[in-house]
Image (cartoon, rainbow, N blue to C red):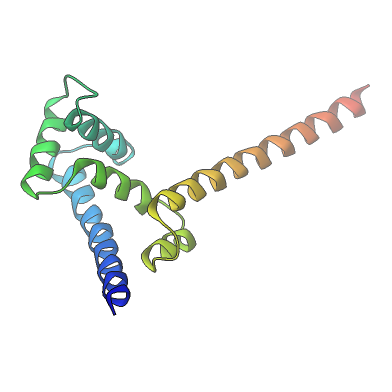
Amino acid sequence: METKYSELYYEKLQKKYLWNIAVVKEYIINVLGVKEELVGQVLRRCSDYQYGRVKNISDVEKKVSDYLMGLNVSLKSVYAWYLASRLPEDIKSGLINGKISQKKAIRLGKNRALGKELDITWRMMDIIRKTVCEVV
């Protein structure tokens, strides 16, 4: 019985965090005027500031940090869920359904991106090899 409750609670918590990430992202972009590609960097620096890894942060990062502290959430969790919100849909659905952990989901996303980069690199090398063979 407890397992069922904990699974339901975990799933509800995951959906709540993913929804809140969308709200936080909109606030950072629309209210504070941060570019969309810099949102992750701002959240990472806020998280590092909370844990003492960064001594000084900008005014915008301070506003984001204060806003998130007002929501009573961990800045590290917000950053981790932001990374999870950027994952491909199949990995994200596995995360929401509790089939994979957050850490494993982020690792799978990184590996998939790296695999795509390697595939492009191998294709370029093959084209270069063919071009050199034709010239010589």
